[in-house]
Image (cartoon, rainbow, N blue to C red; front, side):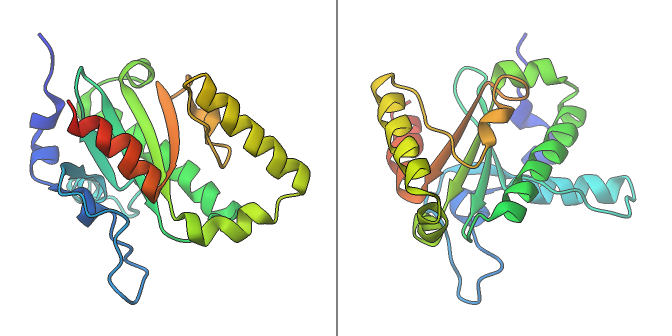
Length: 193
């Protein structure tokens, strides 16, 4: 019998929309990275509740959302509206580690389960990261352009920010999308299912 992870109380009690989980709380003006009304688990809220239950002094880092897809696929989704400099990317790495540990404890699974069923998606603001991307040497930019081209030809995704290191060891697959790619690729694919 398959376990319905989305029926776990901690998840059921912390549902939200992708739009709400994409809200940039650091922005003075309300800013969202997607307008999608697809229901997800607000994993930031899950981690807050989890930490309160344990009377933890420190609240761990966490990804923004969990989406339960078809065929037992589970997606960790992190939205980054700011510039992804080295220290911000390192924070994303920490969010991955903490989120995996807490998720596995909540669902009573292990990392092998994640390698088989869990995907990671980073959605980043393309316009705020153009300068970062343009600061790369022309040789690095050419490599990235060629890499993206061949990945598309092979029908594979091109992963940015060193996040490919998490593929196969922690996640089934890893994706980095701009906001528009997230809409066109990920949201379009789940809308057809």
